[in-house]
View 1 (cartoon, rainbow, N blue to C red):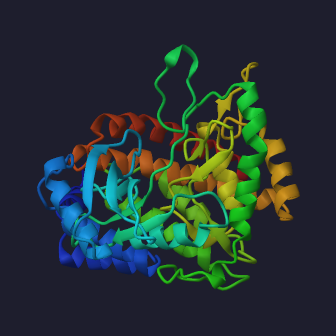
View 2 (view 1 turned 180 degrees about the vertical axis):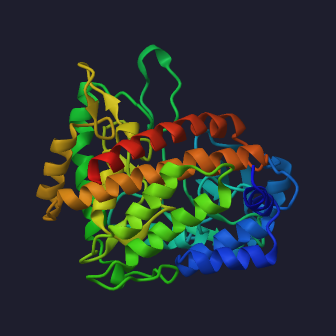
Amino acid sequence: MNKYYTDTLAKRAQPTPDWIAQVRARFPVEKAIDEVFTRKLKNRTQAPRQGMDFTRLQQPLLHFLREQTGQTDLDVRNLQRLSGGASKEQFSFTLDWSNSSGERESLPLMIRMDPGESIVETHRLRECQVLKAAWGEVPVPEVLWTDPEGEHLGQPALIAGFLEGTVQPPQPDNDERMSGVGLYFKPDLRAALADQFVKILADIHAIDWRKKDLSTFDAPPANSVRAMQTSLGLWERAWYEDTLSAHPVMERAALWLRENMPTVNEPVLVHGDYRSGNFMYDVDLKINAIFDWELAYLGDYHDDLAWASLPIFGGPDEHGNTLASSLMPTEEFLKKYEQFSGNRVDHDKLRYYQVFSFYKISVIAAATSIRVAYSRKTHLDAMMNFSGGIGYVGISQLNRLLDAVD
């Protein structure tokens, strides 16, 4: 192993101020993204932190809510960790308080909180803003409070309403599946959910983001590549900061993505992680929540289309055919999207974002997941190590796509 490589590994593990400054200058990202990535590197030298001690969260949460509401007689009950959630620590609890009408009520709530390091470093105020922008436009949990810097709760966090429903339907033979990966939906479920899934995506892209408070977003100009430059910069930076080993396919992919950036004609609000596993439906088979908006940005709708139709997030039908987000054939998904949105699917742009999607998957799974597990900065060590295997599947698919488009 050459000296340059060993020195870079050491700097990733113990980042110096000079190295952090060099990384920030090398990769252009949005201001809010730079904040969280820089904070991650500065915190990397801290001792491992694998899980949240409930007894340590209870009192800060109670004090925070009393301060936010001005109510001294409120109480927090039934604080417990939620299953799922690969990138954030999530908890549910009951808030006993007086509502806006002065009536006492017990309100079910949830907390999304940063772990020591995450498989995707994201900005809680930014997530709070985009959820508020989507509220009333598409089904999302209602955000009530946020602690964007973690001054009160120890880590950056947001608090939102807790919704009941199903995210992952029962799987054949009760198989355990990583959220959103290879799920199976029975035909009646697919028939009930498929059109809703596509219509909601079209509605997200139709949100007039210019009329929303999205101050943590850097608005890109129309008819430019700026949105793609900063989005790619995010993922290149994440790979550079987190990988434990270099990989020629990742270098090849980053170069191809830089050299072939398509123009974003009219930026839309891109969800960034729209797929099975990130929506919930109720007993009436109505989608009542879209989750995990932390990767949202202003860019090209083809990004969401490529991501939602990735084979890695698809599940089979009864004949073994892979379905987009386990709900419908990809061509049907794309046609329905055109019908609901009025946006034309440009297949050249779609191929570009398919390459970008596999690049993102590879960064998350083959670099950052392994890094946070190796550094013992997450409560989900087993899942993070498992996802490393998905990362190398992603790199293999990425290489095949690059061979096809070069």
